[in-house]
Amino acid sequence: MKAESETGVRSVQLALQVLEAVAFAGEPLGVTQIAERVGATKSSVHRHLLTFVENGYLVQDSASSLYAPGPM
Image (tube, rainbow, N blue to C red; front, side, top):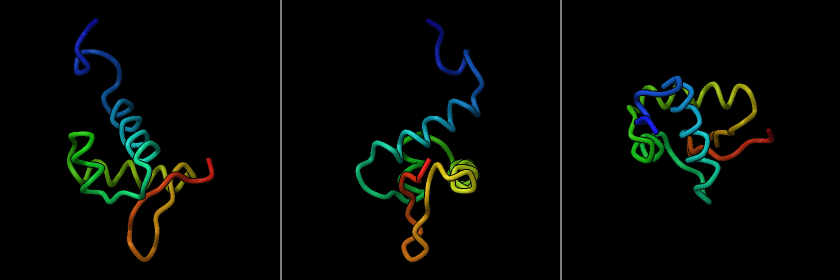
């Protein structure tokens, strides 16, 4: 099996890692926590989070700015 960086589409891999990090965390997470868990920059993670929120896969608490699984 090839190393992760040699296979697939990196942006899709990161998107899945971000989604799974939030989905399986058991509690809402912030951008920094998610970025640390997936080993990516906060700016890259933030762009993925915005897309997931726009499409209903994640929700963001307006008071705490933390992310949690959405209705999708």
